[in-house]
Length: 260
Image 1: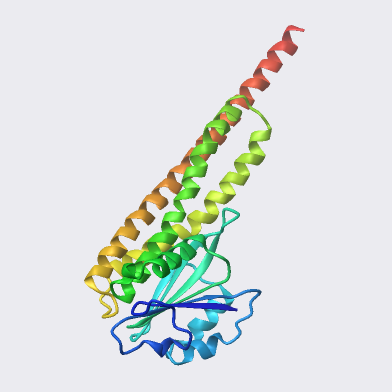
Image 2: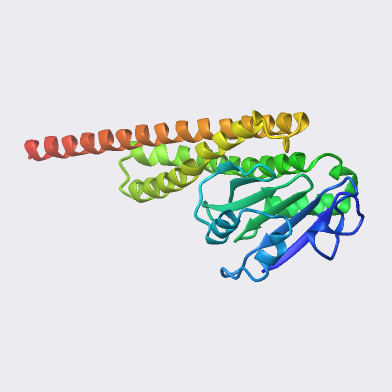
């Protein structure tokens, strides 16, 4: 288990527990990377925050789609981000208290690493409340999903050409792309719903500024969800085009055989 911390009121990340800057009017971000399922001292790390034990256990098991659970004095926000080396998502569990954000993940995240590095290099960016930090994390993770649409746009033109030529190699590529689109689409719609809940949340842990930031992330999620829905429709049309071209080829062959 790897753990790193950043405090909004300190130039250097604190080296002790989450309570090291509490009471100073700031917040602390504790980012936990679980490797090989080793939870290590995670329970000890979060016990002082009085987080829901079942929710922490679920975070360790990585079993949830995006959602929001309100436990009163803290929130659990489950988000998904894109893997670094393949089109697949992984779970990031975010626990939010009045002064602490704990992110628990099982895989590296380029978006979270970039945001963490930004805060360390420029502490002035840390101005704001802890829910605003969570909104920035949500925005970074959701924007990374846009790369799936960009990859689809790059591939679809070649796919259409293969379909119109009735190239049998198209089917295996079509199935791989459809699988990737379906995998991301499965989590984008729940993530959009979670962000919608956060931008309208009555929880005292969410500020007006935080709600505006969550609205921005919600807009990005809506764009991704709509794009993936359109991609699924395009894939269906491409398959129909392939079947039509294949049928025409079969008809041409029949005509030639009839002539012979």
